[in-house]
Structure formats: structure tokens, C-alpha cells
Amino acid sequence: MISRGRLFLYRAVFGATLLGLWELSSGRVIDPFWVSSPSQVFLYLYGVIADGSIFGHLAITLYETFTGFFIGAIFGIGLGFALGRREVLAQILDPYVIAFNGIPRIALAPLFIIWFGIGPTSKVILVVSVVFFLTFFNTFAGVKGVDAELKNILRIMGASERQILMKVTLPSIVPWITTGLKISLPYAIVAAVVGEFIAAGKGLGYLINYNTSLFSTTGALGGILVLALVVVLCNEAINRAESYLLRWRPREERKSEGELY
Amino acid sequence: MKVFTLALALGVFCLSCFSSARAQAPKKVKITIPVIAHSMTPVFLAQNKGFFADEKLEVDVTSTNGGGPDIRALIAGDVDFSFTTGDNVILAQQEGKKLVIVMSGLNRLFINWAMHKDVAKSKGVTESMPLAEKIKALKGLTVGVTNPGALTAHLAAFVVRKAGYNPQQDVHIIPIGSGPTWLAALENRKVDVALTAPPVPDTAISRGYAILLINNAKGEDPSIPEFLMENLIARPDTVAKEGDMIRRMVRALTRANQWALQNKPEQVADALKPSMTTIKPELLLAGVQAVLPALSKDGRISERSVQVTQDILEQAGILKKRIAVADVATNDFLMK
Image (cartoon, rainbow over all chains, first blue to last red; front, top):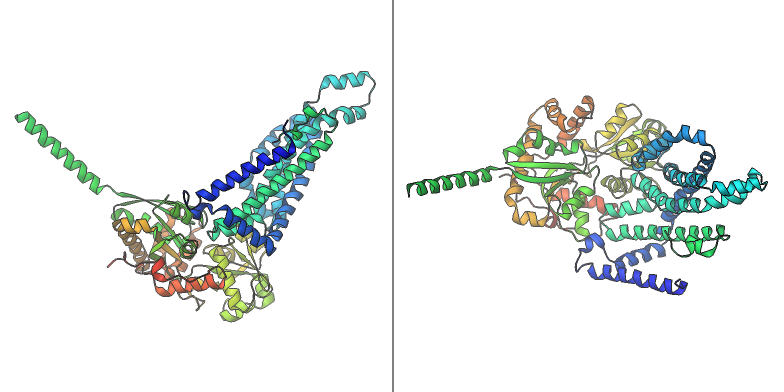
């Protein structure tokens, strides 16, 4: 197993190599009009951080992302858990869940803006619609996959349903839930940004769209870089939460300690 | 020997037929347009009335569903031309990418403002009152534009400043998208005023919840007498190497405009129908009546239209340095 310090070093070297190649190719191999350059992007970011203008956009996007993420996750995990334990109900709702999940969210985005307005609400609902299904399917699969033999053994040993739930079912589905949350987080950010692309007065999506309209690749990439950084930080937070929740598992079974997706 | 001579003659004949057919084959041209709307009248008429075909051009028109990708496709070399607003050319030049306007299709600003009826009532605004009083009434209101960085956004900032107000402080400007989202935002009072190209404001008015605040298509704003509204735009390499193709495109589009100006609006609306199938007939006709005064008779790009376009970008705070007319436009390809 690689040490944390070495891992950090390798990651830093890889990132620096990518940035270096980008800087070198910009203006020499690729027209900077299309790709700008890391130095230009960092200068831009320094400017918007120094004058504070980026923070208002960031705050709005984070608000839309996390509000939608939590609402979507609560409902997705809740329904996934309920349907996983109610076979008949799951069978009744199955075609509806599949049908709703099949609707492309990008097609819904303009409709949400018409229905719920141009403010953050429409973007929050768009995020909910994305996060809900990802967490639902993972939780549902997790509940269905709980070891039946283990539950039976506990029943023979005289455990109540509540004890089985607390000692077997819930611990078993935690990895499924955290995987659902990890997968849905970048999609949540994408949904918020897509909503902002269509109609918004603030947010990172607005900022990227604005810069793109003015042919400022530097500004657009600056916004994209901030988004990427947010995704990485959020993913790290979920990894840590997962590690904490799965601290009872043997170390080699904990996915988040090693790597990663 | 006789057989050989006959075969040779036949070969020469076939070759000449082939090269003659090749010479007469229409030239394939790709062009992007930002939207399917009345502002694209010259392109649609040239296509539907056969003016492109007359010039031996086979024109593939692609709508990009919004400004931006249309001009970027041109810069990237995916298409030969873009028929779009001239502010794109000035802004691209500012970022170091040169493009050339080779013809003006619409030389008047074709963006109208609509105000929600309730707001107009509470502010005492009417369609017939002087422009200066109308724009003074914008204080404290929310103005909807199509997209951040779009021409509507620049124009809104320009008008707000002209009224003596500060954009975002005295008048809030927010993007609300185009088409259905634009209409929904105004109808549900998410914005008090909104601006975009006809026939969208006309739709809001015809549905009874808005009044026409500023009719730029009719030239209501005297500070914008001319504008680089819709233009045929090409890359410098096309200008240098494909002069003949550009002349043919310009001829076809100029003929389209002249045909529109010489015929009745009903005939123009009929000719546009194949390209604008989803628009109701009454809105199609209303849009034609609005666009006719904005059509350029000869395709000439005036210095004034370039300067006024730059005035708007400058007032909106996005033009860092003014650009010489010769750097962005040429009238060399117009019909003699």
C-alpha cells in the first residue's frame, strides 16, 4: 500500500505534468483562442478571487447543488429502502420508476425553468431529479442484496426485526448508499450548472456561459476549474464520511482508504 | 488504327462531358444561423425562392439553437459562413480571432422590448409615450435578457445606462433564456420587462399580458439608427481564396432582400413558411411586417452601423478597445 505522502507527491507530479503540457502546447501546438493556457487561467482566477466576484457565483451553485443533493438523497435512499423491503410495492412501481428515470434531465431543464421559475428553485428540483434515481437504485440494490442467511441465523438466535435491521441490514447497505452518493454528487453539480446555463442571473454555470459568449476561453476554463475543484473536495468529504461509517469493517474491505471512484 | 482513333475520340468526348458536368455542378456551401426566426429572412428566402440555386450554390443551413455555437463553428472551420449578429465579429476580434463581415442582411436593430401589462399600469407606461420617459420608468425593475453575454444583455445595459441608471444596481438584468422560458418568465412576472427578437415579444403581446415597450425594428430608438444586426460572415482565409463563392452568396442574399422589399408581406410570409413551419400564420405575417424595414437593400455595411454596434458594446462595458471598420468588414463583394 502506498503511503499518503507518496500518493500526494505522485498526484502533484501528474497534475503539474498535465499543466505543463497544456502551457507548452498553448500557442505552439493549439490555438490559445480555444484552450487558453494555465497561466492565463490562474491569473484570471487570482483576479476573481482577489475582487471576490467568484464567491457569489460559487455560493449560488453550491446552494443549488447541496440543497438538491440532500433532498434527492433523502427521498432516493428512503424510497429505495422502503421498496427494497416491500416486494409487492416494488413490483407495482417498477415500470414508473424505470420510465421516469429514462427521461433525459437535460430535456426537463427548460420545462423546470418554465414551471418553477428562473430562480434557484428550478435548479434545485433539477438536481433532486438526478440525485433521487442514482441513490434510489443503489439503496434498493443494497437492501435486496443483504445476506438472507445471516438474517435467518439472527432470527434463529432470537433477534427481533429491529435488531436485524440495526445489526445487519443498515450496515450492509451503507457501502451501497455511499457509492450512490459518490456517483450522484458530480451529476448534481452538472445538473445545477445545466440549469444555470439555461436561465440564471448568478452561479458558476452563468459565469461559464457568460465568458463563453464573450469568446473568453480563459474565463470559461476558470469557471470549469473551480467546478472540478468543488467536485474533488466534495468527493473527498464523502470518502471520509464513508470511512467513518464503515470503521467497523476490516481495513482491506474499506474501499475508500485505497482508491477510489 | 481506325478502331483506335474512334476509341480515342470517344474517350476525349467522355472526358469533356465529365469536366463540363463538374463545372456546372453546384458548389456545396455550409452556413450556420443562430435561430429559426424572422431575422433569418434573407437566408430562408434565398433558399426557398431558389436564389442560391440560381447562383449554382447548394447551401446547407444549420441552426445552432442560439447564438454562440454558430460563430464558433465558423471560427473552427466547420462551416464556410455564419449569418449572425456583428457584435460576435467585434468580440472575437477582441480575443484575437479575426472574422470578416462581407454583407449586411439586416442593418437595423431587430430586438424589441416588452413590458408586463401590470407593471406598465403601475408605472403609467404606454406604448405611445416618448422613449425617454419609457426608459426612465425602468428604475427598480427586473429586465430579462436571453443569455449572459448575448446581444440582448449588451443592449439592456446600454439602454439602462442611457436612462442614467446603473445596471444591476438601479435596474436588475437577468438571463431568462429564449422562446418558451422567455415567455414564461414575463408572463409569471419573474421579470418586469424583457427583450428579444420578434416574434417572441409579439407572442407575449398577442397573448394579452404584455405591451410593446421599445420597437427597435421600427427604429424607435434614434441612438441606434443602424446596427450590424444580421450579417454574412466569413473567415479571412475564405475571403482570400473563395472570392467567387462569396460573391455568389452575397448576390443570392441581396436578391432575396430585394425580392422581399418588392413584394407584399403576405407573399414574403408564404415564401418563409417552409422554413418556419411551427409559427402561427398571424405571427408569421406580423414578424414579416416587422422585419421588412430592417432588411438591407444592397448589403452594404456602413461605417455608422459598425460604430453604433461598438457604442453598445462599449456602454455595456465589454469592449476594451474600439476596432477600425476595415478590420471587421468589407464591401468588396457586393453587387455592382
